[in-house]
Length: 128
Image 1 (spheres, one colour):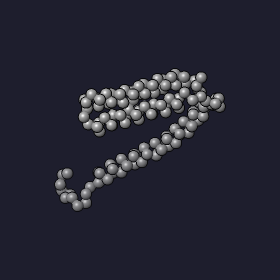
Image 2 (cartoon, rainbow, N blue to C red):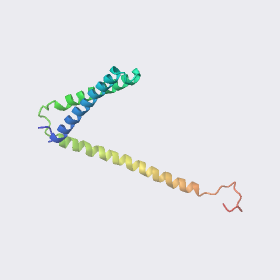
Image 3 (cartoon, rainbow, N blue to C red):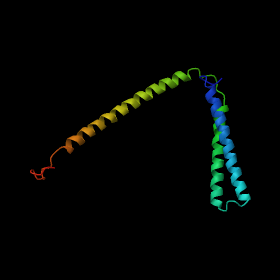
Image 4 (spheres, one colour):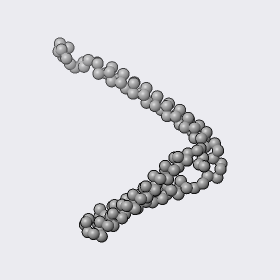
């Protein structure tokens, strides 16, 4: 069993990585097939599609390696540790958000104040 009971997430990520692996292989195969039958004449397009396929294949393999590794059993309090870390991060994020919201309110107030001032060089008898 995965730490924290995330078996559904682990299975979903595993199946998603397998799908990505198949898409990577499909990209490589279609590019090679298109070059073999002469459907695409540009080597740059073929090389780009093959490079994307290889990159996607490598990323999916790394994802599968990082997913099928077993935990050493020292992950009993992972949920609590993640919750504490998320709580601290949200407190900091809330403070930063409040700081910027108050500075924006100050900016709006200053803009309204300076916008409604009269131009001292303007003609005082003019309507606008």
